[in-house]
Length: 185
Length: 71
Image (tube, rainbow over all chains, first blue to last red; front, side):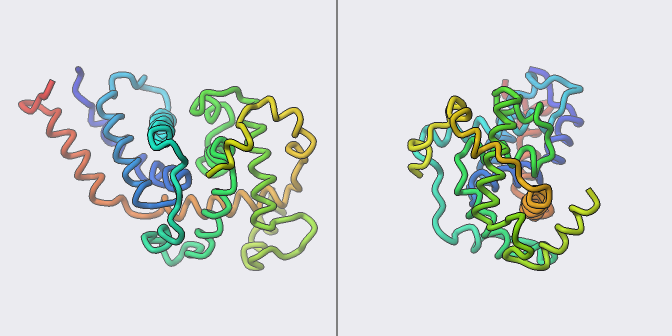
């Protein structure tokens, strides 16, 4: 087995923050999310030979994390459940970020989605992958990802009570910021 | 969660739900959801890397490095 290159190691290190965000958004609990990241890094290290240099390391790592997540879920025979409030106790959100309540709202809303829709939405709308990349990560057709993302957005709009008709959602400040963003689209 | 068993992820459903599912969201609603998702995601991404991960990489490197080959 070839030794792991510095470049590969640095790539892993660099990817950790996004891997943590991805894991957290799938699981909703920081402790379990970090365990999943740890397993992902260990697997990636052991299988570094199967990574094709020049391709996107981040996408490769996301694929590993995702596979690991589902194989754990299968082993447990159930979806990883959330103990109510466990994430809020453990979560260290930066004070300048939107704050704990928004995190909890989103966490709860994401739980309303079927797993396949949730991951598709996160990959495309939060992680910044293209539909094509997301399709590759999930091992499905691009059209499937598009349909999942679309359904997830619709469901999330309902759950979060974001609608086109009302001027104000649950949070006027972010609504204003959003309206501003929308104007500049 | 029993949700998945009620609603099989099969894409064949997509067609029958198409009317509801493909309802095009208002641009501002899409933008709103996107912004909130990114704030949520970015909140975690913005956290410093926990020490356990740096230690993990150091450990893996040691195991793997010259003189430390485990096979």
